[in-house]
Image 1 (cartoon, helix red, strand yellow):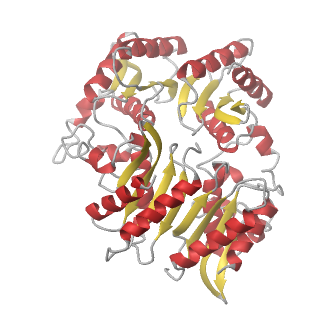
Image 2 (tube, rainbow over the protein chains, first blue to last red):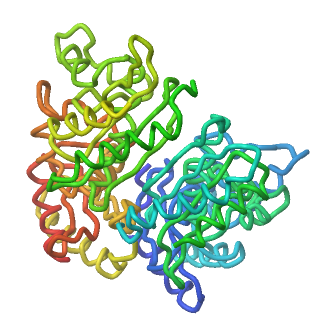
Image 3 (tube, helix red, strand yellow):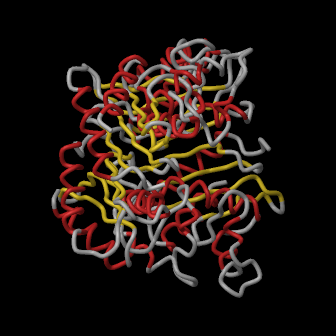
Length: 132
Length: 132
Length: 132
Length: 132
């Protein structure tokens, strides 16, 4: 569960911060390890307070399913195969902004971003994950 | 965390009570500070007991997002950008009746009202907020 | 469960505030009905944020047991008859500051006060209860 | 709620990391703002996974009471004035390692450290707080 070093986690946060630099809003960004345990976190000044919990849950959701949160959301709608799966595992988030951190097929952890539009959150999470 | 004084919070409650005076139903009304901490609360005689928790959550939801709860609800529907966001942050409410208390662009807290129809709850919350 | 009117609850809060007037610290004060449902609440400016939850729990503890919280605490110590009873009912508080509101032998509700020394909290809760 | 800037929070984390450099164990370190909302966090490689939650709770406990967690623990022992207060506010920690971040008499937030002996955790938290 400690495959993701703190150095790497901080590098991921820094890459996400760089990607967030030109946005006109502020973000909370969480990195969890392969076991879903919080490794590193920051919340930019002015980020909505609600974004803290949502970033944490996006990271944990992506880690639990080894899948981007938005992909999971395609199946959790009414009538979908995973309807209301958000109610499991202590509360999940299935809109975009959570991305697994993979080394090949091995899960190292996940990043979750919240504070902007879904596409902004996803873009920043993807930039962070690319720094792995 | 004490930007919202107790005097102001009680004034907001009184204004909301005045607005509720002509309704044929009873309400619970909660005021939280900028950090989401409960500042003042009352539940009118005959208000549904369920309205207590709902008023508290409406206030906290409006505070966490700096947004009226009903606005958030437009995005949390099935297929929406924030589907099932109600499951985050310990449980949110996204139908109308929660309104942020703003001084310009600065969040001072929020008011949450429950007990009547959505439009009644919102009308009373708005009247309370106007007393700020 | 609605035996305790809002008028009475607000009178209890006002009496408690008057009793708190000469203290050099600030308090949170909660009044619950006979069912433990929150009826009225306020937190004075400068009260420790921790006092909010503690006042609510003191009120609910006194209501659940029809007993002052400090009395319960005499039995919840290590080796006592009710050791660790604080772990039940969602989390209780068994140090002083919670007092039941009685009409003869009928429970109408309870008041909980937090923010000062135990004796201060109890004194203010008692003054509030006397206004019933 | 944004009194504690991210720059300052990261400076506090860095100062704590420097202080932790010579320890033979690893630590989790959390910084919360004045409202108890998570601002920045890291967990060193090899830190016990349990230290993550404990660091978060130490920070929040120090913030809620504007007091070092160890001081609170002096009063929460069996027979003490605040026995079992740990059960309030969603779960507190009252052994050393949580320290409020003060600007004079104004609370800006708190730091919580876990992973070592109490005196190590406290020493690192104090070094972090000194960087404010």
